[in-house]
Length: 250
Image (cartoon, rainbow, N blue to C red):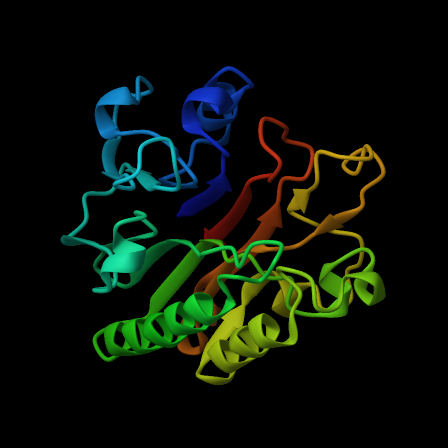
């Protein structure tokens, strides 16, 4: 099974920049999208053989998540039960026979860190949510988690300490998630791989210079790691300020 995740920074914009071509070439069983910025009726890309589950934000043109899947889920849940975040369409959970898949677009704390307290609240709710799911079966978490966990995950670590996405508070919450029985699949498989990122700023030619951050993840229940064949970053794929990532299951 192949699962893909991509923050597209607007599905309609990304469709003009190669989204459909990548989607058709990669032949994923499940394809998760973050920052869709579209209502379901605004999404014109409806490939044969896939069901589409869409969770738009209440505010038009903002946030939102999607999942295209060839495999019909047992159940579908939108949100994590907190209005502030659910109104932004940040989480879709699909239940399959052997696992839950949670597509996530974690709130950005903003440059001024004005949303840091809200983000900490989200992290606490989210950890409780996935641990509750895990009582039934393993969980696969994917998406834009808006944090570079360790210094190896960001090009200019020292200069960015305390900045949005690399605060001690955000990184500590990622550490807490991993200590609660979850594994960062890419870092587990490639513990020493440097200069591999999933997001680059649009300014100062950052992508061409590979001045990036790894903030998109596949994180899974520890007991399910034996089902993982590979965790991939498709850094050559353009179309957004993020690149797609993939998880290959045995």
